[in-house]
Structures are given as C-alpha cells and as structure tokens.
Image (tube, rainbow, N blue to C red; front, side, top):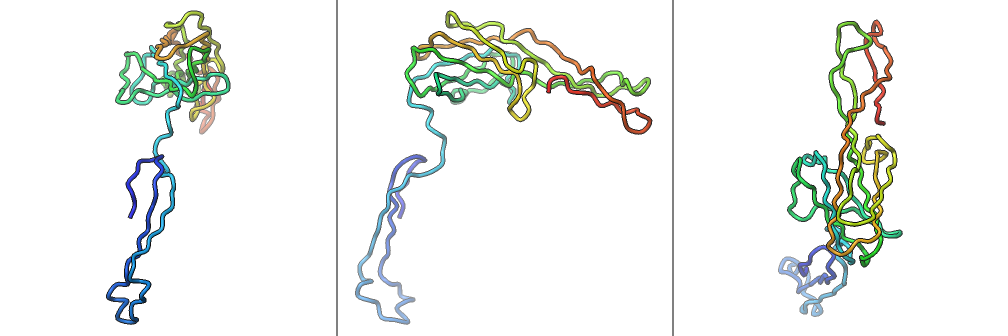
Length: 224
C-alpha cells in the first residue's frame, strides 16, 4: 500500500504481508505466525517533477523583439551576486511575434538589491540565394545572419549593459552574443523592459571553390 504523493513530497511506503493464501496451504500447514498481518514503513521523498522556483522574491522582464513564436524568443536569466538562474515564461504564456515577451525571474534572495539581467540567443542564422562565384550564371545558397542590439532598458533608472561575443550566433545554445544588463536596484514585482533594435543582415564574404571543375562554393559562415 502506498500513500499518494506529489513530486517532492515526503511520505511513507508501507508493505503489508497477510496470512498464507490457499495455494500455499496445499503443501504446508499455515504457520501460526502467518495468521497475523505484518507491516513495515520507510520514509522517503518522491523524486522527479519540476525544481522549486526559488524561495526568494520575483521580478519581471518584458522583451521587445521581432521574433517570439516557434522557440525563437531570446533566453533571459538573472544574477544577484554569485547566485542566479533562468527566467521563465509565466504559466500559460504563449509568445507571439511582434508582441512583448514576458518572463518571470524567481530569485533565491530578497530584492531591493542590485541585479543583472542576461539576455542571449537573439542573433539568428539566415540563408538566401546568391550568385555562385565559382560557376558562371549560377546561384548557390549563401549563409548570413540577422544580428540585433539591445537599444534601450526601461523601468529602472541607471541601467547599463555590456556585450560579449558581438555578432555571433549560438551553436547548441552556447557561444553566441549575450548582453548583461546591470541594474542598480530591482524591487519585488518590478517589470524591466528590454528593447532590441538595429537589425542587420551580415552576409558571408569568404569562400572556397571545390568539387568537379571547382564549381561548388563553400562559404565561411560570418557569425560562427
């Protein structure tokens, strides 16, 4: 018998052993000790489920970015001192292209303190058909990337930001451009607005010709 519990709950599992059944009794007489039900219990914690969201306070981030659906929303995280974690969409939130993207940042500590907001995974790969420089009167797929800048941070005075890996695109979630926004203070339930702009298309320029007749072009991706 097991008491029902949710993930993370502490409960007990109880095993019960009753009297011998009739099949066993065909071979041997029932031991008198088997006439009474026995039980044992051990306390344990149900594993699995989502990790706790943090036992501190919450603030919000609203991101203005042209792409949101299909997993294209930027990644957002928070950091206070040596502590930090990802910010997540509120329950039931479904990002829509061209609309502000909402994030909840559940901290592990008290707010009304200095904090960083980190945004990343916002530059995007792109391809288009271009003249093949290795073969006359032919076209080939050419790599490019769309890059963005953080152009404004609203909702808090005195915010500053720095950029790492400028112009690069994430590969498997790492190595791309990221912007760290330093907030002098952030209060519980405060909403920080982060606006992206200056969209640019960066085209590949370096290439080599190979294959039969050196007619196949291989471009160097400009954002990796």
